[in-house]
Image 1 (cartoon, helix red, strand yellow):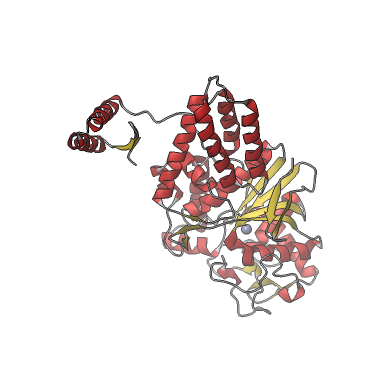
Image 2 (cartoon, helix red, strand yellow):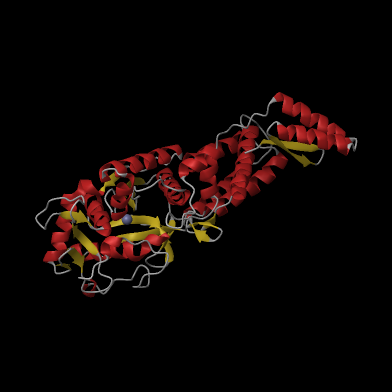
Length: 451
Ligand SMILES: [Zn+2]
């Protein structure tokens, strides 16, 4: 049971060794519910859902924790523009997000922890940082003093902002000692939400909620922290500064795993750029399994360039997998057990090597090509059933094509065989007008529903 992961902190792959034998504590940065979640967010959450399910399949006991930044500048702003209370806006988009996750079968998270439900822990951590000399007070709140933490930048390899970094405006203050110092606790302005505490009435900075929440559930050191790439700097860098200063224990997180962006025409999909498609929108067009396969067909660390063509390709690949599963079910054949075992071994080796799904899928499709020639059998079906436990991409059903469409297609094949291309073309148009597409194969055809 050896799994290797690429660790952003060490910049290399190493064997995943949990702190406690066979128990893995995973934290992934959650959403800030100020708008509908888009398919770029879904990429990270589907990929971590698969990773956690795969670890559980490998018999690890995983506790998967995710936060919800349920108070933030962007929520306050959005609530104002919607003429609603911040809490109403925050809870509305959170509920929409949770519904999206349910629809995508992202159901591996053990606990969603809201920042506002951990105010005591957050204030406690700020006080520890103050006591140890890592934090200071200004007119507008408490800040982390980066001149006291020379390790700042060890995760990202830099200390200055770049264009694609996710930032929080709460950190902008003219009263800071150093340019990059970030906010731990912000004194609330009039008509802003605030929580009373003995360090003054205010609200938490963005970074501190994560370390307060993880310290509460996991203690000062844990196994895996995940998130999208744009969170590495300054967000995850700030988390390291806070927790390692507060506890003195290093490294705060043993393995940092980051997902690549979802791009549209080579630009990252984001709210601020306005080039986003919401999860609900895409699920109206495609089955959740198509979307899951689309994400998993690429390596989690790689970017994906979104396009309808790629989703169509994913749909076709899934049809092939489902077709193969159906043809295998209950069948006997000459296919050798050793051939399947060899395939399984290389399939799982690929996944054990930093969850290399593209490699695993190519091994699977290569196997299917060969197995189709020999004749697939029930063992192949059982193998697909097994991997679907953590992939969740197969329905084991094939799309039903209505009888009248098949009759048209048969007539068209007859016309083509007689080289009556005018008639064949006419029938093709009839099939199209009934909502189906026909693809010509050698003395055969393939039908599919238009999307
Ligand atoms: Zn976070």
